[in-house]
Length: 77
Image 1 (cartoon, rainbow, N blue to C red):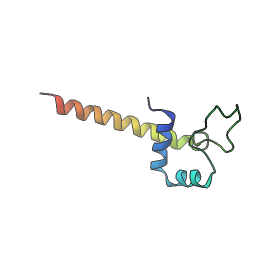
Image 2: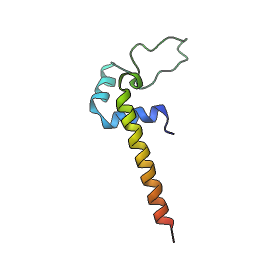
Image 3: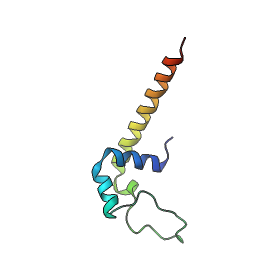
């Protein structure tokens, strides 16, 4: 299973407007919960762009399966 940050980074690569939102400070890729229990100052990417992250997850799963199939085809005698 892909990590939360990996999904966010994949979504960043897929959608320019997400990168723009991060650059403008409108959302954060991640937030360290050790900040004395304080909530993040702006929404997290996973909350603001949940649909895009789900699409990124599908893309990662498809790429993973494609790579496994290619590897099996290359190693089959």
